Length: 244
Image (cartoon, rainbow, N blue to C red; front, side, top):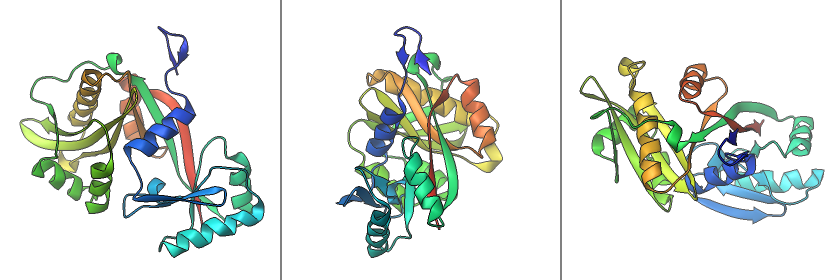
């Protein structure tokens, strides 16, 4: 996607990857040969995955595997578009693809402010926001990731029909605001809460000086992808994982 005012990409895939890393950080990162090996601490797949950071050889894959097992984690690799050779090598080693993910982004100015009393940025997260996250399986490990994120950040409480309905987390990396952990209570879905939270995230991000709002979603989540498209977000990146 390009910024029509500047004629430049709104968010390059490599910058999307950097924003993801900065706004949803691993518990620890360690360089092992050509790899970065992450300890996730229960924060999700990407913060628990190894990635290639330098030229590697086929035999180097075992280095990453051993390092991940030493952390008590199963071998898991994150594969970005520039990792085609690694993708093929892992396939030869019996690794299968899981959870293809798409990155979306839009200029913050493209999203209108939410209607009054529908979404509330705040930090630290209110207990009701923590409760909504917990109901959706976003537990202590992921809350710890949010605490680790540095720089401007906020939680968002979404409301629908005067009742708490959803929660989200937003953090800034440079001019990019990444939204994570979007959760809407099942009984209150399709009532506008997710839309209002995204608009609130964009409005908050603009106040912090950000130019764009971005997020990641699995390819299989067609409902969320339809919502993002309706708000003008477009695909700017992609990645998937390989595991055994």
